[in-house]
Image 1 (cartoon, one colour):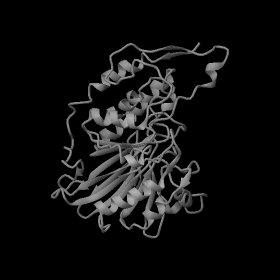
Image 2: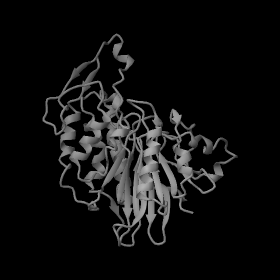
Image 3: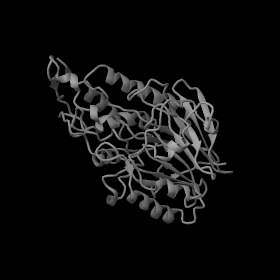
Image 4: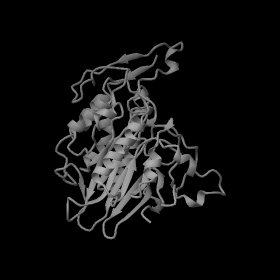
Length: 380
């Protein structure tokens, strides 16, 4: 007989929730909700991809992997001291979560960053709002497991209830934004829903908050409750928004979403002796798992000279950056940060560093053990 020990989950998260307010701000949010360079120092961003909190919640293995993933984030944050963190999708594995409100696990994944007073933003992956997937072994001779729902007071409604339908993107984002003063995440335009995490952030100059250093665009690439795609509507949104905030494409722009586009297949190294030398990375261990359809986003990005790089997660066995076009638009994978999800490759995080004078954009991988590798200049 399987037993779902959800009583183990909620008390832990009530402790974590004590940090939801009152954490020291590393960077005070600007009045317009954007970020700002500080002094002459570089601005550093850590990308955490594919954490997959909440896997196998009915076993001892699952909660242990969450602790391991938190350890990875803590190690990277303490070593790199980033100014900002981006959670690059698949923050949780909602198809394994048995409590009604998966924000419990979402909050747990945010806590290493929040506890250090570092601001962050999030985008959705294909597992974050997925409905529960019933394990086939539950229907063996041992029968359907006995489910013990907790009886605790939690800051998140639904902690006291078991549920198997998943938590919607809008609910996850609403809970994150309302309960965290350090979150820069946004619900995105209503006309793009069910695609939610579509928004832009400006990083301002250190001496002029009106002057942009770089624009960061975030896209919801789907999956989970709807197809894995960046839709034509999202493409049109980017065209409108980029013309609004960066009308002459004079300032650099970088892009973030979870699932790689078909363009990643065209640059992916296919053989040991060909094309890999154009790419910078340490693991080339699987084929690119792309979106279900290409709706034109890459053509638009390729034609916009200000776009320097696109960053994705999703493929745990890839961590490379490869040039896509003659103008050197780079296509980059992050590094698998979580102990949840498939694969046993060593965990780490991609770091992005932005320098103001002179402007430069570079990136590297920081591993859980502190080892650095695969540095690449993205602004040449």
